[in-house]
Image (cartoon, rainbow, N blue to C red):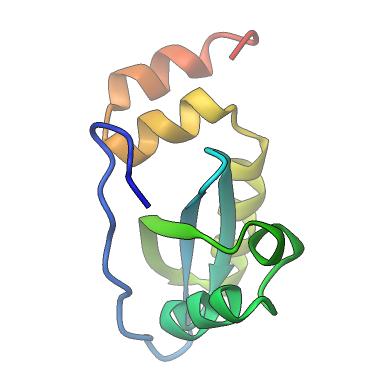
Length: 111
């Protein structure tokens, strides 16, 4: 799967005892899937097998493009919920590391 300019695949981090990771997948249709898990590699494998989420099962092709953490599980759950509410443009700015755009998009209800 070819990635848009400025977006790169990231490697799965090793699990850290008692902590979780927040991740974003870029789906082949251009949508972003936000999730959190204690073991990113195992979770990505479940997505690849079609048992990880309905969206990944339907699209079957995706790339891991963002990782955040490790953080306590409750903080990961809170952050996942926050990111899921973000617009596509704001998620993309985060993935690209464009924090000025994230800040600007945070001030706009249109995005």
